[in-house]
Image (cartoon, rainbow, N blue to C red; front, top):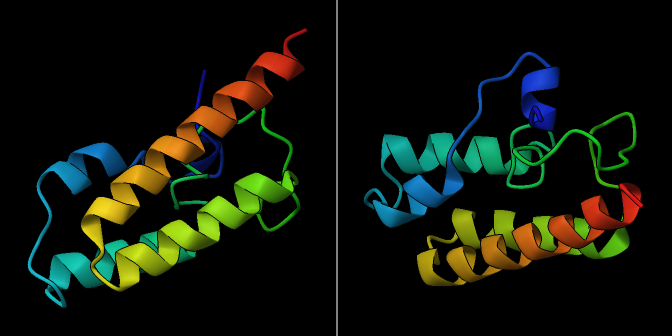
Length: 104
Protein backbone atom coordinates (compact mmCIF):
# COMPACT_ATOMS: atom_id res chain seq x y z
CA UNK A 1 0.00 0.00 0.00
CA UNK A 2 1.06 3.55 -0.66
CA UNK A 3 0.68 6.46 1.70
CA UNK A 4 -1.66 9.26 0.76
CA UNK A 5 1.35 11.60 0.57
CA UNK A 6 3.01 9.36 -2.01
CA UNK A 7 -0.13 9.30 -4.17
CA UNK A 8 0.01 13.11 -4.15
CA UNK A 9 3.63 13.24 -5.33
CA UNK A 10 5.16 13.82 -1.89
CA UNK A 11 7.83 11.76 -0.21
CA UNK A 12 7.00 9.59 2.77
CA UNK A 13 8.00 11.30 6.02
CA UNK A 14 8.71 8.97 8.92
CA UNK A 15 7.15 10.78 11.87
CA UNK A 16 8.16 8.00 14.25
CA UNK A 17 11.81 8.39 13.30
CA UNK A 18 11.52 12.17 13.62
CA UNK A 19 10.05 11.86 17.11
CA UNK A 20 12.76 9.38 18.12
CA UNK A 21 15.43 11.97 17.27
CA UNK A 22 13.84 15.37 17.72
CA UNK A 23 15.66 18.55 16.77
CA UNK A 24 16.18 21.60 18.89
CA UNK A 25 13.01 23.63 19.35
CA UNK A 26 12.66 26.39 16.69
CA UNK A 27 15.59 24.99 14.67
CA UNK A 28 15.38 24.74 10.91
CA UNK A 29 14.49 21.04 11.19
CA UNK A 30 11.71 21.84 13.66
CA UNK A 31 10.27 24.53 11.37
CA UNK A 32 10.33 22.14 8.39
CA UNK A 33 8.48 19.57 10.51
CA UNK A 34 5.92 22.25 11.44
CA UNK A 35 5.29 22.91 7.75
CA UNK A 36 4.88 19.19 7.06
CA UNK A 37 2.58 18.67 10.06
CA UNK A 38 0.38 21.60 9.03
CA UNK A 39 -0.45 20.17 5.58
CA UNK A 40 -2.99 17.32 5.45
CA UNK A 41 -1.02 15.69 2.64
CA UNK A 42 2.27 15.47 4.56
CA UNK A 43 1.07 15.40 8.17
CA UNK A 44 0.83 12.27 10.29
CA UNK A 45 -2.53 11.50 8.64
CA UNK A 46 -1.15 12.00 5.14
CA UNK A 47 1.62 9.52 5.78
CA UNK A 48 -0.96 6.78 6.27
CA UNK A 49 -2.61 4.44 3.80
CA UNK A 50 -4.21 6.12 0.82
CA UNK A 51 -7.48 4.16 1.12
CA UNK A 52 -8.67 6.25 4.07
CA UNK A 53 -11.48 8.49 2.74
CA UNK A 54 -10.43 12.15 2.42
CA UNK A 55 -11.72 15.48 1.24
CA UNK A 56 -10.16 17.25 -1.75
CA UNK A 57 -7.68 18.99 0.60
CA UNK A 58 -6.49 15.62 1.92
CA UNK A 59 -8.24 16.04 5.25
CA UNK A 60 -9.55 12.70 6.52
CA UNK A 61 -13.33 12.48 6.43
CA UNK A 62 -13.30 10.69 9.79
CA UNK A 63 -13.90 13.31 12.47
CA UNK A 64 -11.76 11.60 15.10
CA UNK A 65 -8.83 11.30 12.73
CA UNK A 66 -9.22 15.00 11.84
CA UNK A 67 -9.18 15.90 15.52
CA UNK A 68 -6.09 13.80 16.21
CA UNK A 69 -4.33 15.33 13.18
CA UNK A 70 -5.00 18.84 14.50
CA UNK A 71 -3.67 17.87 17.92
CA UNK A 72 -0.55 16.41 16.32
CA UNK A 73 0.16 19.62 14.41
CA UNK A 74 -0.17 21.76 17.55
CA UNK A 75 2.10 19.43 19.51
CA UNK A 76 4.77 19.49 16.79
CA UNK A 77 4.48 23.28 16.54
CA UNK A 78 4.86 23.66 20.31
CA UNK A 79 7.73 21.16 20.54
CA UNK A 80 5.69 18.84 22.75
CA UNK A 81 7.51 15.76 21.52
CA UNK A 82 6.17 13.19 24.01
CA UNK A 83 2.59 14.29 23.48
CA UNK A 84 3.10 14.21 19.70
CA UNK A 85 4.45 10.69 19.94
CA UNK A 86 1.39 9.62 21.92
CA UNK A 87 -0.96 11.33 19.46
CA UNK A 88 0.84 9.68 16.54
CA UNK A 89 0.20 6.30 18.13
CA UNK A 90 -3.48 7.25 18.49
CA UNK A 91 -3.60 8.33 14.83
CA UNK A 92 -2.06 5.03 13.74
CA UNK A 93 -4.52 3.05 15.88
CA UNK A 94 -7.56 4.93 14.53
CA UNK A 95 -6.27 4.54 10.97
CA UNK A 96 -5.90 0.79 11.46
CA UNK A 97 -9.52 0.65 12.65
CA UNK A 98 -10.70 2.56 9.59
CA UNK A 99 -8.66 0.44 7.20
CA UNK A 100 -10.01 -2.73 8.81
CA UNK A 101 -13.59 -1.47 8.38
CA UNK A 102 -12.92 -0.55 4.74
CA UNK A 103 -11.52 -3.98 3.92
CA UNK A 104 -14.60 -5.84 5.20
